[in-house]
Amino acid sequence: DDHDHHDDNGAHELRVSKIQDGTVIDHVRGGQALNVLAILGIDGTDGEEVSVGMNVPSNRFARKDIVKVEGRELSQDEVDVLSLIAPDATINIVRDYEVVEKHRVERPEYVEGVLSCPNADCITTGDEPVTSRFEVLPDGVRCTYCETIIREEIAALIDTA
Ligand code: CTP
Ligand code: ZN
Image (cartoon, rainbow, N blue to C red; front, side, top):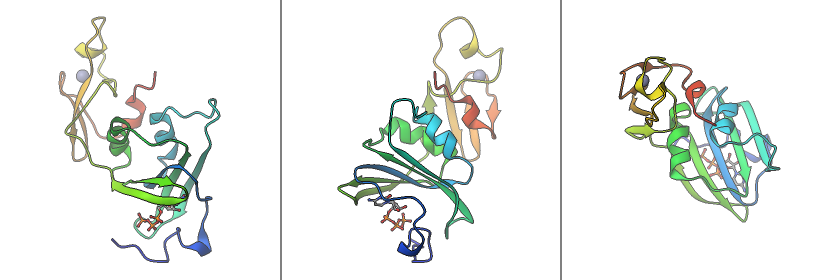
């Protein structure tokens, strides 16, 4: 890893407090933190304890976002969807203030039922209930049914309902 003490995690420059138990989603692309919260269904109304750092300095990228969720460990499904908007993210599981697990997100081959196709003529957007299915490409996603490719604004297609 390219970890060194000039990263924002150095004790001299901790922007967001450490958490006791939960998940730290680190190395999120700058500007994507609010989309990470949307994917996790976090809007603050349930009283979750959440800290967000946006555009904080990082040595891996020029700037990164970071999201810390107290009292929650993420499911694989959630991590799969996160990988679409935060492909370089690190998921850190924290217990009793220590990082006990750390893994990079991996992009799945397909995501089902999590994005809605923007094509109004697509079978998945019609009256019949058809679960959406997108192939994950290196630089976007492609609807399995109508082959529409989306490269930007993927977060806007996330079915948070
Ligand atoms: N962290 C936290 N609360 C804790 C422990 C860690 O918020 N109780 C955060 C750290 O601030 C850091 C991330 O979790 O942003 C990962 O922690 P750690 O593995 O200790 O840092 P690094 O070694 O710098 O991680 P990496 O190499 O993945 O950059
Ligand atoms: Zn489609």
